Length: 191
Image (tube, rainbow, N blue to C red):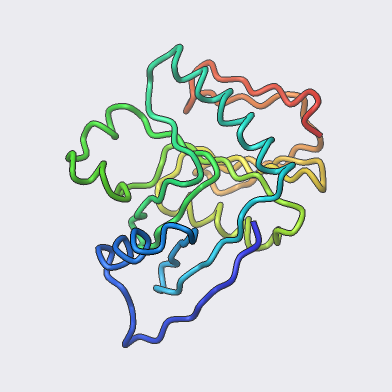
């Protein structure tokens, strides 16, 4: 997704509650917030990317429905990360126990946690450097598995807490084990 960053002066920084209220007051805008408090305005996804993203979300949702191990979230969900950033991964999954440990009020707003799994699907106009930085931020905040799918380069970058991104060229399948036990994402026809 193409994005614009609105730099915020120190005198105009939002609290988590104020940022949530800003998002609710402007539902037609997709907003994120960096850990420094800058606002990120994200453009809508292009058709091809949106269709592929929906397909990937369905596949994770079907697996989750079968195994009932957690909760799946789409790209409209904001997460308030431990570093103070508010981010919306294209697809996210949170282990059931962690989700249920939140209060009902926390679950109604931007959940104050990093998902266990995130997936980002790059649009043709996305910056690889920005996407990689976002994946690193997820890891630094507790994400246990991240997949960055880059259709243009026909590759997937796999992020794990060990800090070394594994790059696969045009893989046919991805395994979510052990974070997503038994989840295997077929990428036949994806590229």
